[in-house]
Every structure is written in structure tokens, then in C-alpha cells.
Image 1 (cartoon, rainbow, N blue to C red):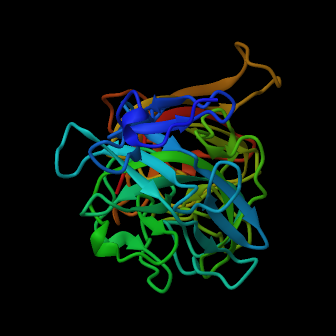
Image 2: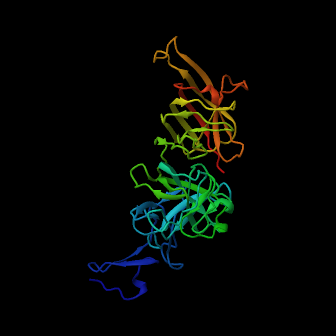
Image 3: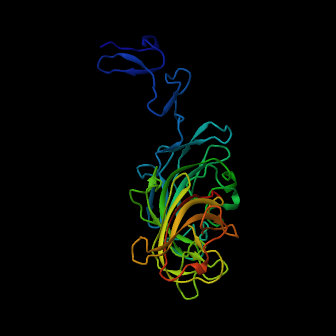
Length: 386
């Protein structure tokens, strides 16, 4: 075996590998794998440096979510803790260089505690009324960059189509329950909100929650295969509960999807109100019921909606009337109406009203809805981001 005793025996510069069998010394260079950049791979000019390669598309890498014992956690994709040796990465729009992407590492888990524990989210209404929301609601997970573009805060919202985080006035965190609109954010952990408000954000996933108290406390629904990073519940049909986003409770104790609107809303059976929300902010709704008692007041009949809309829109239709022979035929008294989506006067909720034609100002009134009338409606509209 040949013995090499000094640098002159080496045949190349840089990192050297010694083979104990042959005695050979071979020059080596660190080379990057997928998603990795190597600086000074030979070590000649200094220590080699490895860093994550900037992604060419926005997204999340090595990020996952868990829920256990009342704690919702953003962790690594395997469920292990994020750390300096097991970082996650978020690639999103750069604040300082609009039009370019920046990749930011995440080296620690971020959490919030729901109503199953010592809640840190309590008091945030997300623009729902002070009543329970017992059915699952889709909730969307965002990554938000800080001003220096070197840290990420994770936050949740009721809507999926924000590209910029809200201002501090509606960006909540533990001890600051200011998430009062559907476009509000609630931050996991305890970040300095002014470092993150109005900065670029990226939708990375979704899960579900219910509201368990009238004081706006929330419980995460057990995760399933429809939840997670890269999941957005676009194919999930959700039920809109009674009396949750501006609906009125009637004096006779019956709940309603109709608004009193200055009169008294008609009473109806809970025939079902379902909706879907796309990650682009389009809301699709289907509603059907039977009127049990007429409304009062010569005011427009209005149905509350699960999300506040941008503005007045005409995007649906409704059939209202009586099936005399229990079938839709020449003997039935059914009237087709156009659906109009608009803001309420307080601009905090949206509602549907009904018109005979697109151009008419003659609307369906509370008193027009009478016993045994059926209501069958479908509609789509755009949810506002504020």
C-alpha cells in the first residue's frame, strides 16, 4: 500500500477522500441535490455552505398540521417539530420586490388552543352572530411574511382568497380578539402583528371548525382526509345553520333564514340550506323550504347568506309558489323570480331578495309568502375579502 504523507501527494485541490484499502486520495466536491444550493462545494475558498434553493412556484414545503387535546399545530410534514435541522419552507410573493418570489424558512411550530382547552381564540366572531355555529365551517390557513421577509406567521380566516393580510385593526392574536369580519385573520402563536399586517400572504391549506359558545369560542373538528396542506374543501358541501349571520329569531320561537327586514319574517320548515366556497371566493348556495306561516309587513322578503358579498349581484333564480297537484304541471301556481344579492343597510351582512325580472323594482314581500308555499333557490356570488 502506498502511504501519502503530505499535501504534495494529493492530486487535486479541495475536499479529499482517503481510501484505506488502496491508499488512494481522491478530490471530492459537495454537489446539490433537489431543492438545495451549495456554495464553495470544494471547500477551497472557505467552508461549503448549503441552503434551500428558491422555489420557482409559490407554495409550502415540509409543512403539516395536527390537532390533539385542543391544540391546533402547524408542524413539519411528518408531524415532527419544525426546527433548525428540520425546517419548513414557504415560498410567496416578495414584499420588497413585487413580482418576484421569496422563500422563507420556518424553524418552530406555531399553535393555537381552541375551546377544548384554555382557548386562545375566544372572542373572535369572524363576522358571525352571537349564536352557535354547530355545523362544520371551512377555515383557511395562510402563511404571512414579515416586513423583513425573514419570518413567517401562520394565520386563519373564514375566506380563502386573500393575497394580502388585513390591516392590524382586524388581524387578531391571543389576547387581541379583533377578528370581527369574515376577511379577518387570527394569528397562531403570538407574533408582533405590526410586523405582518398588510403584507403578502399565501393560502396553504384548510380545515374545519364549529362555534361552541355565543361568546365566539371555537372548536377544531377532528381532521380527516379533506383537511390539510394543499386541501381547500372546494368539493365539500357545508350546511348553513339557522340564525347565524344576520338571520332573525322569531317571537314565536321558530328560527328562520329569512330576515324581519322591518316587518316579521315568514316561518318556514328547515328544508335545508347548503353552500360551497371555492378558493377563488365564489360561493354556491342551494336552499329549499316550505312556508309554515306568512310574514308580516309590506317589506321585501330577504334571506340571509353565509358570506358577505362584494355588492349587488344577479346570479341566481328561485321558484316560489304552491304545487296544487303536488307536481309541477299546468295546474301549479309557481312563479319564477330572479335572485338579487346585496348588502344589508348595516353593510355587515348580505342577503337575497327576489324580483320578477332583472329590471323590475317590484320585489317579493314578506306577506307574499303564505302557508304551504314552496321555496326552491340556487345562486352564486363572490365573497368580499374584508
